Image 1: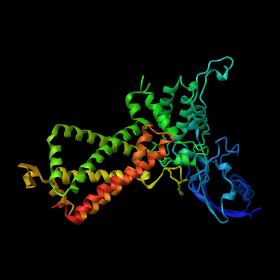
Image 2: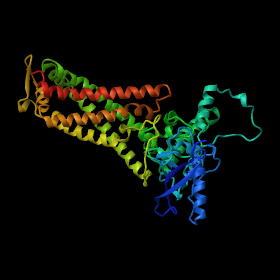
Image 3: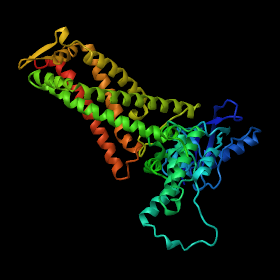
Image 4: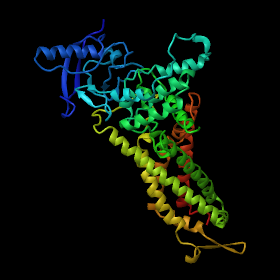
Length: 250
Length: 232
């Protein structure tokens, strides 16, 4: 068993959406390296509660990297330095004794801070509402193998559909663009025949909503694919742009 | 359905516009560099004849110039819009910033496009004033080649590049150009949607190599002329 460690945290505290926030230092001793970072925050929050202070607000749900609820910027990198994981999958064994860890919320105008590290990501829901659906007739489900789909295509669609909508792509983007999210969603539908009936309206509507929400423009920094917990590639962004161009032809 | 203006000026449309105009400008500077390489000839004549040859096709050249000017203007407007939207999309920035490393393509090139772009824009203005609208036949910059009088642009180039200050500024601007082109090349393909997982790494490396070649090509000329005085 490895030795317990001490970490020095600097955590963004903000009372409400309209108040000014600041980084507040906290020291957490005796941290078990097998704890996750969120569990370490839970321990800190228990201490704060015992002391009569307000606990640090942050979002999390499944704590196994599939729900997309958690999301913290850990020392400048959304979900932390480790590849292919969500914040909840980051363990304290990735830190050394005496490390200083800065924890900030995801930053983007369309993701306003609600309190401390909690942000409002409903902008993503509004983008999905514009085109993240397919037409299905009511009645019993048809036989799945009626429409043959090549294995490779199915894999590409699945890779795109792995997006959990956490918003780390926006948080990491120097321009706060939502291209990887929207690119993944567009790709998952346009790759499969079921998504074809609405493909033209979908790409135009979802891109339109993305712009209307106030996300930035994509400058191809590709920082998004480096922080994505599902390691979704920027080729999905290229596919979305192709879809957009295709939508211009009658 | 949305109007054409909305479609073209959507964030995807803007980026495609930026890519198309960027490709036009990239192709132009490639041709420009190839033309400039004639400065390395042992006589001023080939370069002067080339310049004279271009001037003969005044009509076509004017059309190309207008095309380039439109491309530059669109490129600047889109670039500025991207920059303004970036500021608007994240009014409160991070206190601690970092990069997650590969497969990120965030580099000094990609994050400074707006600044290297501004330097290049200023450079183009000075460059055109110096050479295109610089002294010509009337000011005595004349060369007699096989009985025809042509503008001695070669002399103007050699005289300009004998000034150390101008050479330093020119070289510095071309280094900025190199950084701009490094991100520009693969980014243009990505912006037009012409990438796939196999093609992307090749494009990226090709972009770096091309940027180095382009910058080096433009840098060697003034330095060579400064130290050798050219062919004359």
